[in-house]
Length: 102
Image (tube, rainbow, N blue to C red):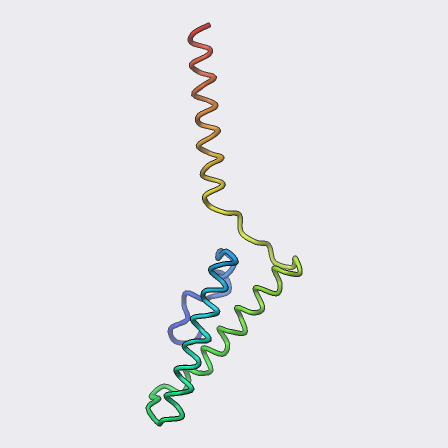
């Protein structure tokens, strides 16, 4: 993995939701623009960073496209699973109260 892209590891990208992937793609494109600008003005110190950011962009595009085609599964929303667990706990508590009153 390239320098500074530990959060964009393929395993981590599987856990990101679609909106976060789009946001990470936007950030990577902005960073690439800034790196190219620095390179053109002679201020760039780490030329390898351009290559790393390009690979991150390609990786993000790949994950987004695989999800569109159904090759890669979209992660289940965390909030929805928490809400289901809370609903189950509430139902269990309601049933316990009903059994106690009977």
